[in-house]
Image 1 (cartoon, helix red, strand yellow):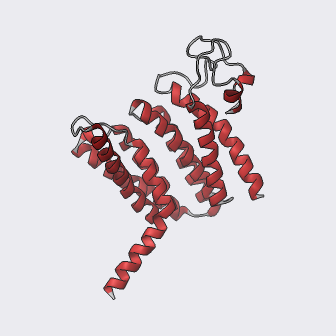
Image 2 (tube, helix red, strand yellow):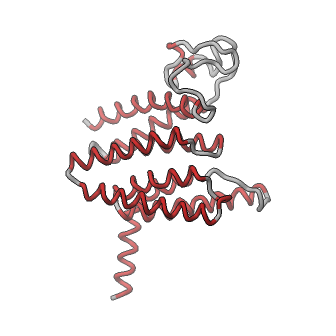
Image 3 (cartoon, one colour):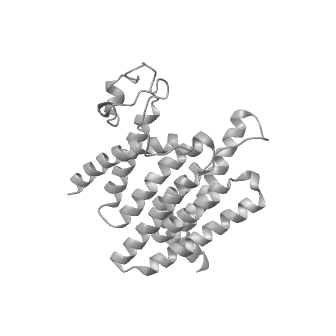
Amino acid sequence: MTTIAVVFAALVGLGLGSFANVVIYRIPAGESVVQPRSACPQCGHVIRNRHNIPVLSWLWLRRKCADCGAPISARYPLVELGTALAFVLVVGLNGLQWSTLLLLVLAYMSIILTAVDVDVQRLPDRIVGPFAIAVAGAILLISAIESSWSDALRALIGAALLGAIYFAAWFAYPKGMGFGDVKLAPVLGATLAFLGWPQLAVGGFFAFLWGAIAGIVVMVVSKRVKQVKIPFGPWIFAGAWTGIIIGQAVSDWYLSVVLSTST
């Protein structure tokens, strides 16, 4: 059953990865993700269904438009493969449990918003909003099925806490953070807190740590201190996944050190 689930996750990931490319390209441009049909940005010809198969079509067409021969960016298959790989890892490592649903939503959100933030250095409401609804829906569904309303309450508190921290950071230094990051924070706060307080604490801390390290690296490479801008969204997600992966272990280690020191 696990093998079947992993294969299914890979196929769903490929399909959703193809749609992610549409969202990444169209939403920042203010376009609809439904209409019109996908077309070559160079010649305007509508992409045929047989040329819209994730990854395979890119290889089959030899990375070129079938009509005008314009090169097709490698980002398209990379996003599709990245989404499939992320889904496979989540399902393979977390197994068939309800929390996997929430992690899949987070994985999809991470890929889309990271790509958008890298491209335009902003997190559009038209993407953050639907993901916020998806996260809230997943949390309520899991809480209802597992009768774990205390987890839902913890998620609500986590959303408020992380949202307040980001708002305070933005208010203190608006140039250091976009307000889109502030809007994203409650969504991730709810997700991490639903999984546990350690995940929230470690995830929140490492977001700023990874962001600071990235900023220092950019300043060193560019040999500039002023006017250095980096998208913070990717590091928020990096921090969140750090919290999910090692949050409990870090908490256990910290508590053991504190307890051993106090005794």
